[in-house]
Image (spheres, rainbow, N blue to C red):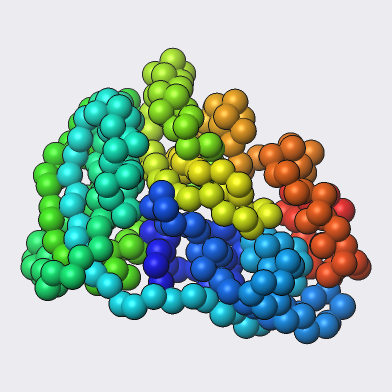
Length: 328
């Protein structure tokens, strides 16, 4: 596939239905690669939706509200390799040069380390050079031990002694720079063994810097102790009616808290900031918005509700979450 998210544990139907995405300012989310699918609607009918059918824009990101996806056709590309460059950069440099970094890399993302002025950056670019994967020991050291085992220890210490988190955070950017070439699917998806809760919002791309600076200022003012990085990714606009990138180039800002920590105050404060920038929450992650708030964020909201009424008039697929985001 031309792009993937950074976690690969989802089912394909769940990933496309919730708007799962990767990063790359010229590339849309996973659902944008879907060129046809077959649904079983709320009445038990088999609904075949082909490329070119206007219904496809409604059901690719359907949030589980319009039917069960029984079959999906996804556009593929020839197998390709990625040249990976991972290195820490000053956050100020990343924000000042974000347009350039996004433009000259096929896939650019970064992780800002709260309580520091550093960001861990990932620049992934297609290449026809021979594969040069990380040597086995270096891969284990960086991807398994440092990013999972050692980071997990930092999070556990921070959970027990939150006052130490700002000091512990200074160690995270010190892992150095890495460069290698590997198959795309081995690069896109990452091993994630440290458990966490997550909230992610898509905002118009042009507001990325201001929103991140607001989050940094808010963490300082409220004295939140945050051990997890803030992840930032970029995608192209798309035409899926309920896509978080619908009709606008988007920056995705994701916040996390270690499992078992009190995440609600921090997440609520971030959500307030995202609201200033017309933020749309990721459908498959935690958020607090209701259908009244969501309806003003999507230009074709009422059209989607009409499609839902058509495909599931008796609410066969009703659940508490769908009632929260769409109403009864």
